[in-house]
Image (cartoon, rainbow over the protein chains, first blue to last red):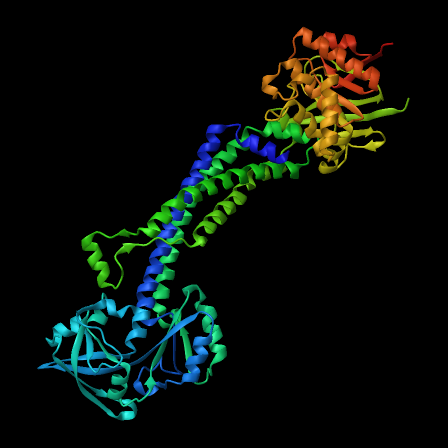
Length: 405
Length: 229
């Protein structure tokens, strides 16, 4: 009967209750859209930076990340590789030998980042094949190179021309070689476009005199959300005195910091929104209390304990909040699903600018359940805080005085 | 007969804008079980204040109120609420039913507070509605009932908790003469048949005519106390 009573009570002033519920609905809808866009943009940032470059997890020889030189490379130990790939959630591994060299063609010379890759595995992780704009993609037996479009333009080199690479090899050996350009790649990030040279892994090992050595093993995993668990599992499988296992948060800490900073501003915006809605809700509860003081007095007079009456009023506030939250989620869900499947594309000029930062030029929407649960928590938290007023008022009221009103 | 209610030397002083107002002045009264008593007097003589004190809604500035041997004048708020729930029925001038509940639910509500089973509540509520001759109004909300019908529901609600006595503060003030007559007859019958104790505050002559005991107040003190046969 308390439920019935609470439900009927909230509809005593139908218009006011509807306005209150609609304001909560609107707040939840707006908050869900804002958070979905924000989390969606973070997912995209992570995907662009991590999924298409570093991978979610990397394994190196211990100390490589702090001192990225070829002498800190490690042998391709099949037993270690097997231990890693056996860990649940690891789909594939992607070996790389990364170093630097001078790239030269004709009279032009430029410092380049040289990456020895297993072309098929690399494509699985970074979709590298899709970035070929001229020539063809490497195969594992190829002895040619693929280079970034910016670097090719600087060196005035094209497909079929020969690139000279000159650098320092493993343990002080000199690294020098002539390689035909097989493909030109276009990267959204200028640093990649202007610097990268790709060779097949055996060719790079030969160039640097690092037979069967790699600097990095990146892992392809089933779900980014499983990263931490997979890292823990791998660390328990391999010798951590010899290797280092890093997740994407350690590999790109600046990205994590940027996201955290942006997230704080997003949260502040949300709290401002909730503060505004909170005042509206408080107005309703204030009126609801003021106009029922006489009735509260009668209920206590006939024998209703104060805590029961307080519970009844809290139930009414909770009901309005639940209705508002549910309506807000129900309205936002189809909107978010639609935009998750059909992200909004940036206008052309802005899109091009965004692309230069290595980002896909779209407003991505996330469907992370936390978006909805957090709004529900926020509204319920506000309901609890705001119900403090009627609860306090009931606790303090004098029965006879309230019935004299 | 032993007193059901025994008020001894009660005084109630209000401090309205720092000038003390003596609403009840060293008043003592005893009411026995089964009485049909009216407290009468002009407006402002202290009828409602006395009723509030006897009903545990207000506490006296000094003096004691014993109900069935229990001193309620110094009881803790939560204990007093429970005491009222189980021992005292209230009928108010403005009926004061819960507007969103039907007549049946309003009567049930008191028994819900007493934690009685739903089956028992519904049966008792229906029985009371029958007694009040408004069984056909069980599913009507207060707004759909006349003043007389609402006051009958209020009386049924007061009786629902099986109280030791019922306090009625000017119960006929908002009723027409027919409704007043019907309500008084009803309460007199319940008093006669069920030995329910009724205490009214009123300045309605029709109520006074029905009462078997008339306590007349002037300036917060009893000036006459007449028992009729």
